[in-house]
Length: 333
Image (cartoon, rainbow, N blue to C red; front, side, top):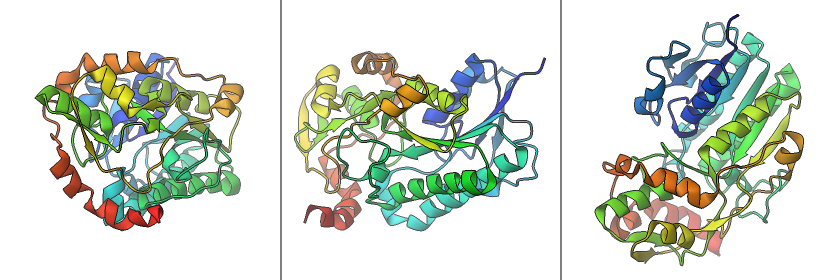
């Protein structure tokens, strides 16, 4: 008996690679689609000798609906896209092209293949400076092009559900963390910044006073939520995914241990993110399993992975975030 097939776009990326792990554990043959712009081959090294995990190194904007890549697939998990806030302010055309038009290509491939379910990776940044805990019906208030592009991609997916009857759900990710989180690239991901600073014996660059809270959710829990959103009769729904238990940046520093230097608070950023996860727990019987401190210690066990990550300090951070302060300061007025 042949194995069920799933397609994971962005499958060499942070969350996408953990989605591959979950699917393999559940007996799927997995087709990974990635152009390796943000993904890394090393994220899939545990599957290098597994014939049930195949890879196609292609940009999602080049996908054709009549191609064989999606043929026979039961599920599609769509993570591919470009992230990060500051670059989206500097290059909005790229973000709209990849995150919206690229999503259209994926949707058309899934529709042509007659898949049972497509699950879209949405971003909690679409809510803006939201009331907390934040429910799925909270008003949308995207503050920068990245957030807007992810929201438009989600709305496109729901449009395909409404018009073409493509079964779609969306998982709105809050603050995912865990093994394989990005180690290189632009300034942004707090774990990559702090782990490299810890390795170098440098002080942690804490934004503001460190009391801001983030709804950190361990990446394996995120991938399990995506599977739950696929393996259900429910369709046409957005599900918030977080731990429902925000942790302060000061708490993260306390777990890591080390000196601190403070950098200016960034305008337009929420003081706290907090997902209301009542909908996904009740409709899909999903709940987070990995406590925050345990998740951080799991990452620390492989801290050497961050040896080659950029080492940020207050001066380099100030330079990297000039665009942010220039365009986002309006939200502080």
